[in-house]
Amino acid sequence: PPFHLYEFSEESFRKHGERVGYEVARIRRPVGEVYAPAPIAWPLTRLMEASGTGMQMVVWLRPTG
Image (cartoon, rainbow, N blue to C red; front, top):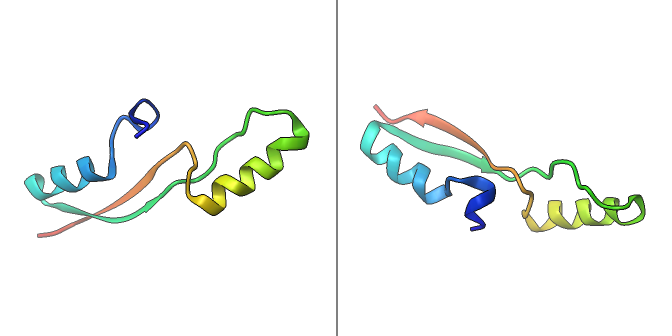
């Protein structure tokens, strides 16, 4: 969650990998553009970085076989 942002979850990558021969090597949630007024954009960005709540998900995969 929130599904509408990712459309895939960490668990969906893991389960799919078990079926087709890859594993999740790493997951990162970078903070993209923060659409907020300038005085609060920087603190919000830092907060999201510190809490791992960025609105993007980057997944690295590796073959298991």
